[in-house]
Amino acid sequence: MDLIPRKIFLDDIFDDFISSKREQGLKCDIYEKEGVYHIEMDIPGFDKKDISMEVKDGYLVISVSKEDVVDEDNKNYIRRERVYGKYERSFYLGDLDEDKIDAEFNNGVLNITIPKKEKLENKKTIEIK
Image (tube, rainbow, N blue to C red):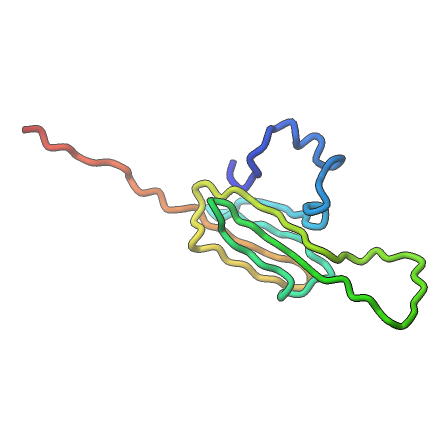
């Protein structure tokens, strides 16, 4: 199946226990509808300018980064849970059309659509002499 990171299947069992910090903040749902893959990724607390996407070596790479803002108001924090730093997630594209990837960010949700490539008949007739 496309859009699944290439790794050993059994790794999926342990993902919730061993997932890296880079992936913890980028949870998503992936589904296919009418020949188009959809990725819905929650990225709350970030702005559109904090997100970058690129296709590199057959992978869709989504990066999110935000600098920690330190207030100089001598605040004595009891707890700090808001997310800062850099997070990254990548998906193998396989037979999907990387030239037609579309993305929209609205209300903390990144919606990505990636259509499958049109299958061209890979057939060549050879003339016999």
